[in-house]
Image (tube, rainbow, N blue to C red; front, side, top):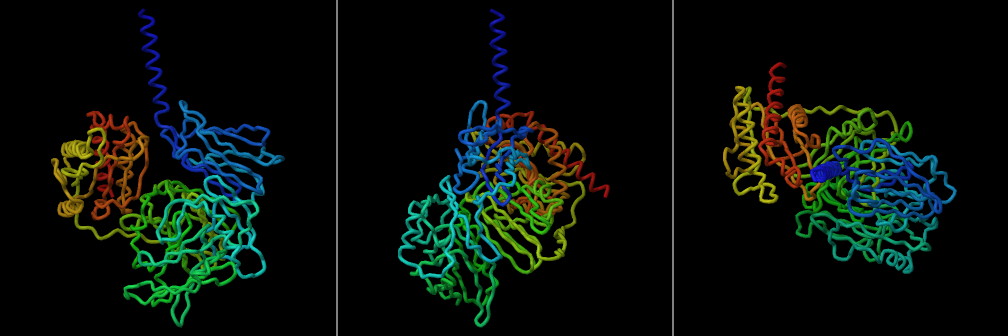
Length: 636
């Protein structure tokens, strides 16, 4: 009887250990395809254990295909699939092969006769890259949204949600559009989920199924032309591509061409007043400049102020005076900038792919001095990961900075002769930046200076317990973030005081303190550093681990030091450093950081966060990091 009882206990222990192994699988986020590189790559959010070191694929026949498995992983968003026509790759498919254990399987089907022995699987910065050798792929997962070179009369029309990728050729002869052409276009997109007749903005990606015998004259069909949010909204069917803006005088105008585009005859040459209320005299007009090119012209006293804003599905473009743009109005789906992948194509051409957690709304500004890409709905990015990816590459001088409230700007100095091409993935979750150098590129190194700081009290620390009073913070299962943050903050204060440091707390009990009041408190106390303590939360239950956020560059060293102690002292996932524009670390003038000590939304981590052991370990790690940083500053 004792032996049976012992075996039962042993089995239960084994079961819990097994569950722990698979408690946090890697997340397969998206399937990406780039025929310019002959690459298929899977964007993956790694678990704390990381991905398996080696990937091997198996060959199958009838049909000719390969498959490989991603162990301890789950597929986000369900089955993913791309089907191609007139290509050596026929189909790419991702599916959740098994659960318990969690295994995602990727299957790539080729045309018969294609030699699959040249296929290579590589783990690059957490992306699984499938290198397809020198296969002559004719279709593209990416669609161009910005091009500076002359239009190519042959292009690929990509269908989303696993429909059809079909090569389409524009006729060489110039002919007037017939009603049958319009009918064909409407028929081709009749299953579209996008309603273009009411002037609304949309964030869904359209599913398109082109019949094999349909030959479209254009890649984009404009049938919407409205004044919206203080700008001009151009909407239509297909995928929009814009050229570099240019300016004309007498009168002053800003011009943007949209190649491979057909404009509905009902809206051609129609003038619209940008400011119907009379607050400005700007007038817009759109026309069919060439048989396969639309031209948008705005007559204005300030042509240099206008910028193009691309929707996440690349189906509409907002042309607007930047001074009137409230970019927060564009945000209905927040994204984070994930990983990057750099590839050198030749001695003059380099490519950078940036991936995002959700479709991204963006603007592209190219002038004679450089390139600026505004990612309006991107909340944060992992600066250390990006620096690691970009270092020793052509893009090493690409800089990232946060916009007010939300958004990220990516900037890079370029020569006037450099040629830029930007593509967007069909799901809106990736952007590919391709730059071909036109001459010697001399770039000025940006100088970052910290704002003037008030005289600080050496050895004094302001600790900020997140939330409080009527502001509960994140809540799960009756547990409030505000209670955990206050407890841990008081523990940190106790440790620091015992070591002889001066400490001031923005709140010492359960009361509401506004963000501005926290900043003003810190400024009045004039500490050496400011540390805000929070608990993280997510919609999904899987995320766990510690993050440390900073904003000003002079706060980075403090963030690195405290974060290192947290990761060393607490057994959880290292989610890294983030440059984020949280109010309290943006508006304080001393080195300031915000610590996210764990996820209250994760069942396992929530249970740990409320224990005295986890609270004390967290407080000890934060205090030790603070002490190390202050001592390092004293020795300078």
